[in-house]
Length: 350
Image (cartoon, helix red, strand yellow):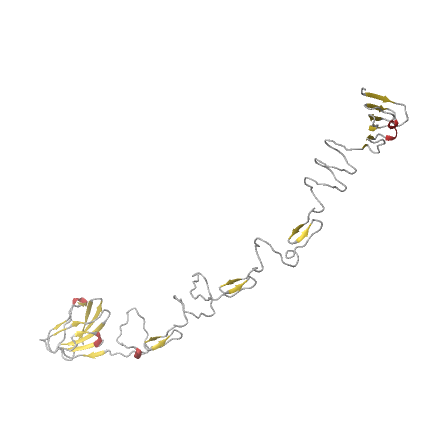
């Protein structure tokens, strides 16, 4: 039997009650209905009469613009979709989805009310439906964290510094400790309340000497001044440098020594600052002055036959003094020593 395409019009009966042979396609212009084969299934109904311009596929009386009885397959949909969608949806969905979605969704949602699986943050369950508090962060409690805090109130584990426990909550005082051999940076300023231990090195200043010392018989440890008497000196014949400034309370010295005969032929200020000499025979003097020393010699020849010889002397005016023989008078001669040179000056007779 050949395929048949029929057109029917003017009938008021529903095409569904008509007899449709197998392999026939009937288009009813009265009912705006397209029927395929003996199954009498409505292939499509559109417009006209009670349909009000609605299109139905597999539906006798569509109530919406498009009503489909069965599965709809398409490459794309545009516009609002109202009703239940059962089955897999593959592709992008643009727009709001109102209602429940049952099944797996592949892709990313911009926002969501809750997480499908709650997560634990700092030991507190979080699914996104409400704020949470973290103990030790924004509420009282403790929090185990990893990493390093820039600052902290206290060390989690106290540490010992030179034997003193330290956790950062308070200052501590550190002693030398059990190891007495400590090295301090020479640029450091260190204040000790007291030190009980041997110290090696030199202190710029000290209140007292550890061991008192004896100076000219007087004990001295540096805590007080001491006075040294001349009688405390073991050698009173001391020479003072000419650059020294010395203040004496009382000076007792012999300024005049008279020497007669040949006993004092050595010219030495130790025998007196002013010395007299009367020859008993020809006399030769020797130089015993030290540099810086001086003396005055008053001399007279007992006989004109006596000669007087002086040591090498630089005389003022290159005049070697004559020695008087006048009884009761002396020739006055001044002598002084500078470096290795002996100088002399004749002052006349008196």
